[in-house]
Image (cartoon, rainbow, N blue to C red):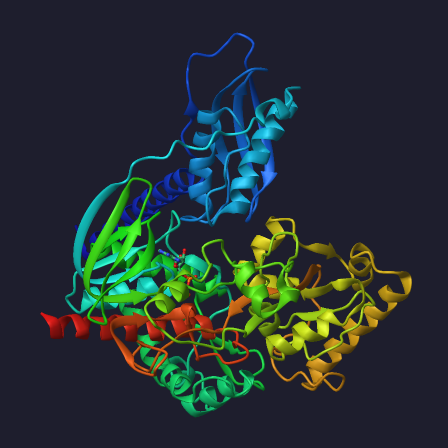
Length: 609
Ligand code: ADP
């Protein structure tokens, strides 16, 4: 066989191997997709002759939820979720649990899964829709569900070096860090899945002085500028030392994230920062919270960290003024968890309306973007052992919240060029100013709501925008005029809207927004059809205040002293964001201070060993 022939054979073989690998990969992906979007049938096989097989749908958080129900007028025999696009690890938990609960209770009136209310309601509505499609009355399956009989909980004692309370971004980070430091960690999470509010972070992670910024020639993205921007936008209320710590450790945090396989590929403008870019985004503009929580969760699993979900910490255990563990409970146990160090990472209180309205009564009926676990537990537990709090009255409204269900349209839309108009079809503010400025301006507009406007070019560059289209949140139009009409604007307002869009595109071309002085998120105009609008208004988003800490994430008591053995990080703490949190700083906060708390707790535990 000559050389040519051998070469050809080798090439043919490598083609065959390549194609085979491709096919295997494709089969693997298809099987994975099918597995992640369908669940097994729930129910029994002893089915009456009258039973019908019915299908129904309802809109979930990310798209339609489709179910198949086998039922007659008296009984639901089987439920199967045929399709859904709900978020893995959150909505998917409800997709799995609700059919079981509906079948067991023979009622659609079962409780929603904590933290996944929207998906839970969607599954229940889809079941009702299926029943209705067969002429069955869903109301006959709305019987009241009897409260579960109280169980005698078994006491249980556990031991570890570090107990971390709360498995959002901060708790996951602190747990990983402490485990990497060789410590034995127990991580507690009160709802059935990890991720907390962090899972809902969409835009990106602010960081300064990073390698990526240097590669991109972003000379203004310095630690000094980031520190000053954070302090200024927080109305100089924040603790400057904590802000500097946040900024100084942000670049290291980005490097550390690479070790857990999380990488950022783009840096966008941060709202209110006069065009300076700190907002690091994962590839393709996917939502940063889901991305980071998935990476951290994988790491937690790899490291074998002892995670207890549906387990609520109730009290910090103290001995001689030092934190030595926590009390916690799940459905069956009361745990006494002995630990050398305790880390509180329980998030904010943006779902605790009593507490929020004690600071601002106007918030009593506001919509919140927070998940139901954000009730401020860590703050109460810390106060009970003498901790001080700061800035508790500083509660942030986010300007672009969908009022029907609290879904957040993240700042990344505006960073990539979206604008906000009122029902008169006009802009009324620098739409990428600080969140407080934009929210307050919106509250002064007629009709109590506004629209965020974007185009197909933005959709093509921001993967997370697709979920708003699939979820039925967007109003669309092939021209500005058509979009204006579909938004329900008056004829006059449609004319204004067309003018607003044309003027905006001219401003982008000139690089100057003469009308409202916007100077960032102006890289692309909004001229690529189709055009999109989402109806929005301000909603509660972040609680800036919380437990007082120092730069080592040690908790400070009301006399200004450190409480030994007690650490806190993330949204449960105060002092980092002052009077207004900058978009992208919550993620920076939970990674930077999650790492600091994990390290400080490890060092404390080490010193006791
Ligand atoms: P952060 O961004 O600071 O990590 P998150 O809201 O993302 O805040 O996460 C906080 C987590 O703490 C949530 O998942 C919440 O359910 C959990 N949590 C709150 N209170 C308790 C508690 N008492 N016991 C266990 N977990 C808790």
